Image: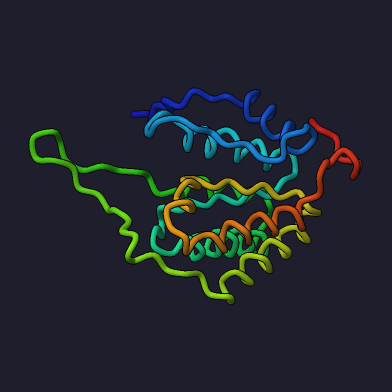
Amino acid sequence: MKKIDWHYHRQALAHSYLKNVYQGSVGRIALLDVRRTGKTSFLLNDFFPEAINNGFIPIYVNLWLEPENPALAIISAIEKTLNVLKDSARSKLKSIANTEIKKIEVGNTLIGRIGVEFTKKNAVHPTQSQLLAINTGFANLAKQGDGKVVLIIDEIQHLATHKHFDNIQRSLRTALDTYIPKPLQDAGFSWN
């Protein structure tokens, strides 16, 4: 039996977001809504492929994969992307979006739900080497992609849950401001 794709594709919206971020007055976009409304599905199934189709290198990071140590999640995503670029053609970047771990809740209203929760007491302060690895990773990605790098961070609000994560916010902001040129129309980039 053929698998049904229930995702409602919004390629025009993805193209519009990508173009606005890289040619418009907006440097960053946040998608805000309650959980389970399709934000991640849109990012992985529409925005990620649209970025690839327009010559960008998308990096997908889910901060809930390492809630106590989000720097590790960011470094891991950067390394995964660099490895795909090093070992194969850019077309293989789409495989990263396909390996996203699905968010699953187990249980029902009678027995309750089972899940992993972040506890602030376990928050790991990022090391200087981790912050440097984030910066170096972005530098390498920007070099390989001529500055056309798109960072997609799922659950970014998690960086505001503990003061230990303040340095990660600063490191990301610095990397984006340093290695991603704005606007791209000045670099002779044209849209499909």
